[in-house]
Amino acid sequence: MIRVVLPGHLRTLAAVGKEVQLDLPPEATTADLLDALESRLPMLEGTIRDHLTRRRRPFVRFFACEEDLSHESLSAPLPADVLSGREPFVILGAMAGG
Amino acid sequence: MSSVRVLVGTRKGAFILRADGRRSDWKVEGPLFGGWELYHLKGSPADPDRIYASQSTSWFGQLIQRSDDGGRTWAPVGNRFAYATETGTHQWYDGTPHPWEFARVWHLEPSLSDPDTVYAGVEDAAMFKSIDGGAEWNEVPGLREHGTGPSWQPGAGGMCLHTIVLDPSDPNRMFAAISAAGAFRTDDNGATWKPINRGLRSEQIPDPEAEVGHCVHRITMHPSWPKVLFMQKHWDVMRSDDAGDTWREISGNLPSDFGFPISVHSHEPETVYVVPITSDSEHYPPDGRLRVYRSRVGGNDWEALTNGLPQEHCYVNVLRDAMAVDELDDCGIYFGTTGGDVYVSPDGGDHWQAAVSNLPAVLSVEVQTLS
Image (cartoon, rainbow over all chains, first blue to last red):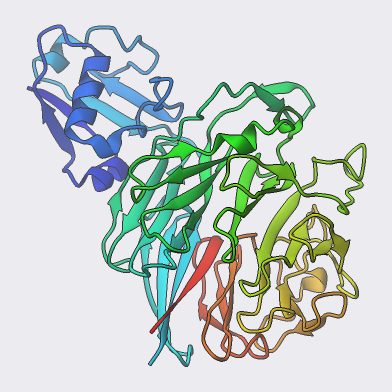
């Protein structure tokens, strides 16, 4: 079971708590995680990745295991501790805006 | 007794103001969607319980919210705005070609007859249409593709399609305005469009009387006179008596003819309201006095309306979508400021009061008259 932490505005939008749990296959990638998240909560489509380019929105960041994964390829496998559920995959809004 | 519902979009959420027909005792609900920019909310003329809202942030992009119960509950609907065809480029601020990119929805214009049909004006400039209550959006490509698009250039706020006016006498006719491209009209329900900027003069562009390139800030129309259009341009207040084919200036005795909103009295088609702003760089009222100007003769002859408005040390702006009128017998005029005040006049502009103060900067104000 993979644990995903959403930023406050997206929790409100999706009417969910701090963590969303997803079932993903072993060796799942960040793209797989985002696909599963958007399939479960379709109102999030377009808020984390651009609808058309499918790229991460510029002011959205991905953190896990005390690492910034924002610039990793979306097709890279998730960290083992995320896949095991030991650590959450954190989606958050970038520190911007003063 | 009739009542009014005022839909206020701000930099940090939406607010709904409610009052009875006296329009003196206001109940304020909000913020809705706190922390998000609400560029525009507007109710369907065919079903006032149906309200659409444009919600966005730089972080999480564009959402469209819909209410089916007059704003009590909301649900996100479709937010995929994909240009229908190859977009090519428009001019960037420095004159170089720049790819067309969707940024946000500036304006939502529900159909006059069908609650499920709504138009969206977006940045980079294009018009979208939904016929299923906002679930899916498809571009009306004839506007962007009519031919002059590659020469369009953004205004300071972005290259936005911010005004959509539907002609109540002809369902095939619509008007749109884009900063800084100008005004456009379709006579075949959006299939084809043409620029309607003859008579506009803009000293800020190489050819002041060019076919396109004018920074039109807002167009309005009285529904009983659909061929008469009033325009607040970057500079100049303008009027057309032939559905935009030609324009003439009606700035007359205004203290400044720069501004953003323009509205028409709901029962007097020749009574027009503007809020003069000092200049294109000084976005506040002349002399620090917040004055709405009213012409009862369709322009040129303007009177200052000040009763109840701050007359010293006032340095706010009133943005293009932030002025509206109700349809009660004594027409109410409403506007919101970047200082977060929403002012109401229940008597056509003679007296004003703040319905609410200290909101986030107001981006849009719309009024629904409820029976």
